[in-house]
Picture (cartoon, rainbow, N blue to C red):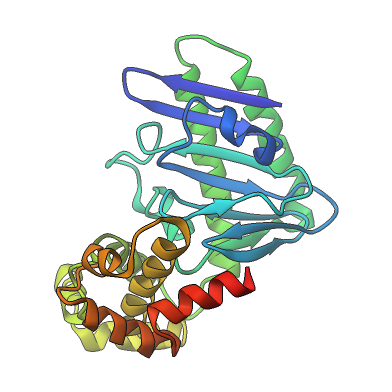
Length: 282
C-alpha cells in the first residue's frame, strides 16, 4: 500500500506507505524529505541510521531527516512510513514546537524514539485510517486536509516526546533553547566551532547554555558541536568516495593535518586507520 500527494508548482510531496523498504524507491522523490518511521508489527525490527544499527520495538516511532543516511537493508519486516518535504509542510508561519525544527527534529545526533502507549494506540491507528482515506479523496482541498492530518501526527508525537524524552525540570523556554541550539549546530557546524558563536545567535551567555545542557544531558554544548563535526566526517568516509584531504576541506579545515589531529583526538584513530578498521569490521 503506497500513497502519494504532490504539488508540482510548489515542489511539494507527501507520501505514506506500510512498507518503506519496498516502496522507498517508488515515490516520485524522496530527496530532502523528513520521515516518520513506525513499527506497527508485534516484533522488533532493525534499521540503519548513519551506519549504526537501530532497533525499533513494537509501536515505537522515530523521525529521521534528510541530513541522515538511512538504510533498510537489514529491515526484515514491513515498516510504515510518512514522508514529506519542507515545501509540503514546515513553512515559516507554523508554530515552532510543531514545525520541522520542533523537538521531534532536535538535530542529527540524538534520534527521538517515542513509544506509543497502549492507551493511545487506538488514537494513532484511527489517525492512520483517516490519513489513508483522505489520499483517496482527490479534490481542491485535499492538500489542505492532508497538511492538517500531518500536523495532527506531529502534535500527537510531540506530546509523547515531551513526556518521554524531555527532562521534567525544564520549562518550555528552556526546551526551545536546546532545540534551537541543536538546529543551529546542524546548519553552522562547518564554520562555527565555538559555543560563544551559538550563544550570540540565541542571545544567551555561554555559561547559560552550559548550565542548561548540564540539566538536559551529560554532553556539553562544545561536545555537541565537535560530535556533529565528527559525525559528518564519518558519513563522508562511509557514504562517499572522497579522500581525507577533500573531507578536511569540506568540513572547514584549512589544513588536512589539523583535521587528522582532530579525528585522532575524537576516535583514537587516524582517518586512514578508521577507514581500514571500517573495512575489516564491515
